[in-house]
Length: 303
Image (cartoon, rainbow, N blue to C red):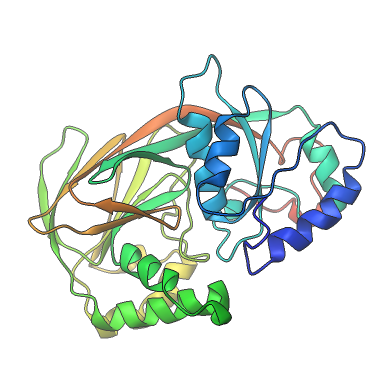
């Protein structure tokens, strides 16, 4: 549990969840610095691991669970209470503390894929979306924002500055065994899940259990059009733009003459060149949709 995720929302939410889960045999470990969640998850053995926090906490937990080979896919649940919490829009989980005990003990599981990227900083896994381009600039600027502003304001400020100063770089992209395409891009999203950047519906066709990525290329779009088109990204209608292309792949390779930043699940992940690979059925998540205890106000959600 990351008590500071979402400007403290995760800690406050878990306080109520813990009271509702009294009597369950579990250990609660709080993170105090970057990397703690990875270490805790790596030492969990075959136990169910619940990640309470934001997308960064989920990212660390997934890397801890998948760092070592296991006889069966690790079991995990994600209680999203971070700044963006984009993973929670794809993998459903309780919103009410009183539902959490039933969720943890439901014994209904769903296999999901993970992504593996290899870049300038080595290999790491991701569960939701990685991108090459402006996303890494936004993450880097947000991380250096003033602490008093909180995660949401820092992210919005970083996004606005990045949109104004970003220059679209030239990249080479290959999907599976297809041809190498040369594109000048704003960003390329390699999507296992559908959302990034605080509810942007970047990959409407992405599914976390179909054994492939949806690869979304936002090409050489100008600053003004980029800003004016932001509502399309939130609605998932950006495919109507001439600069946007969609593809599907199990492997995506991106190269460039000059290094370009990468982010994965909202965490910086080195620079190009980079290779993305899908890892089918890497994890088993608690299947909240089909557990029989899905709350009425969540019943309309789809992945």
